[in-house]
Image 1 (cartoon, rainbow, N blue to C red):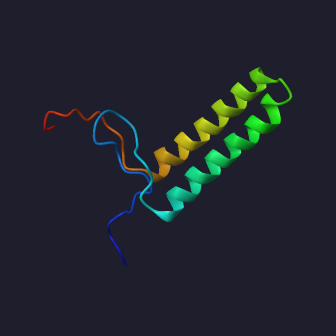
Image 2: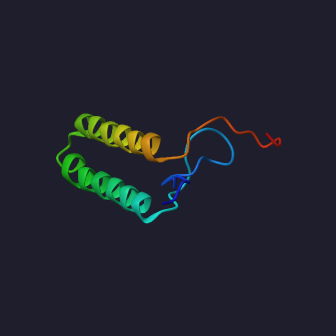
Image 3: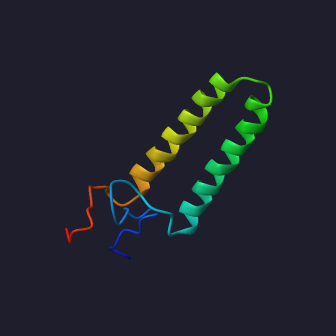
Length: 83
């Protein structure tokens, strides 16, 4: 059994947050997020419902951040000065 936890999203090298996914599961989540955002753009913006689109995009982004929080490396502030 493997003791080391494999993170889907590594912590950013500089700043706070997560970088691009490093596992296929993370890539799948990222592609699904982008596809859902593109679908919402076609569906809501085309129908001139930009306010609803902003709520939709905010909800999708919150969901992506939740997945990153649960499956990503614990975030912390990283500066370029040899922390």
